[in-house]
Amino acid sequence: MDKLRVIISNNQREVKIPTGIRMLVRRCCHAILQLEKFEGSAEVSVSFVDNEEIRKINKQHRDIDAATDVLSFPMGEGGKYDVNHETGAKILGDIVISLPKAVEQAGNFGHSLNREVGYLTAHSMLHLLGYDHENGGLERVKMREKEEYVMRELGLPSSVSYIAE
Image (tube, rainbow, N blue to C red; front, top):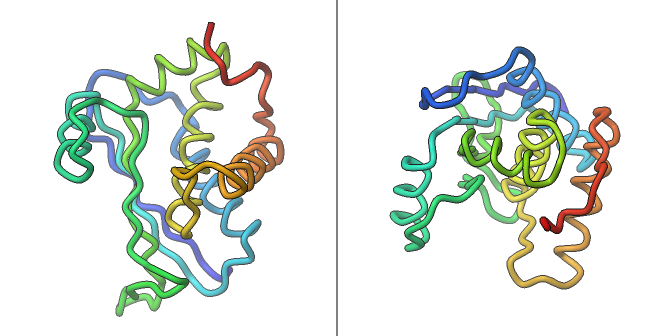
């Protein structure tokens, strides 16, 4: 990978973004691209929103009228991406994270907000690169292994099961 541009916007006011979260998001994006041996420069957009906004986006794009933790909008298919003509970077797509939902899930799973936002970012980056866990099976297992590998590499290993009690 040559250069990575991560454009981060905060479009919510419910959760104060802790120091270091933006850098963590950039590190997660970079780690996934390194793991996947991505070639060339890349560009990713990450937006932090509230539950109401992600619910609206989920309804509009997936016809699911519920808040969710993260949504991914890939700009490429089969390894082919739109290109930013000014920079030559491949535009991977958009990631939308509900920070209130991330706070809630961090509490449910007993880990830090950093761990949750890092995980959601890694998860979405894999979606932008073409991975899909929706049908379960081997693809789901591969995604989880890659997500957890990156979390360990960034010093955010899983400390508990992902099954909330």
